[in-house]
Length: 66
Image 1: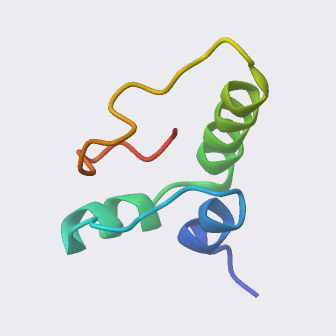
Image 2 (image 1 turned 60 degrees about the vertical axis):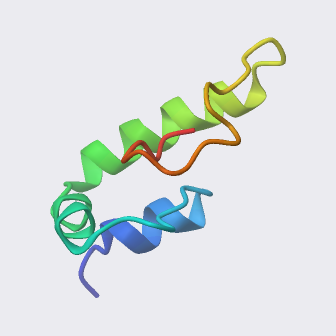
């Protein structure tokens, strides 16, 4: 089975709603190491009690880490 970056990121809670085809293609091309790093960053941000995501109620701007 080959590595699926989008599937791995989505399983970790990254949201791709509103992403355009070019953005999805770029994310799909990430290596396993890059996905592991992004998931690690997301996990740390999610567990930090004093971190408030900027633009929580704003439309998706291409950022999917938090």
